[in-house]
Image 1 (cartoon, rainbow, N blue to C red):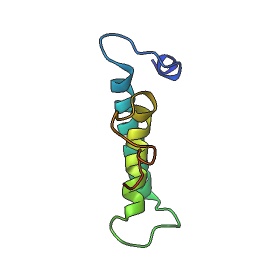
Image 2: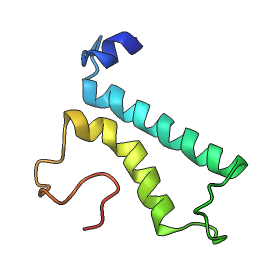
Image 3: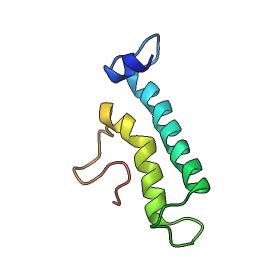
Image 4: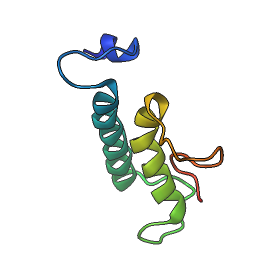
Length: 83
């Protein structure tokens, strides 16, 4: 299945957007769990920083955005960006 996703194709009744959404959530969860075990040098000790929220949003939404960006989004909008 990974080979199909890498080539931009979906199988069955699901769209590529739906497959990429699951993959993005998995990537974001992997990043969160990794930070819980070994926080990066940039962490300032707070429970959650805006940069971390942006990183999680970027990881979760970029695979979807790559194939189906929000139709009303402007050029400066996207995963992990501030409005």
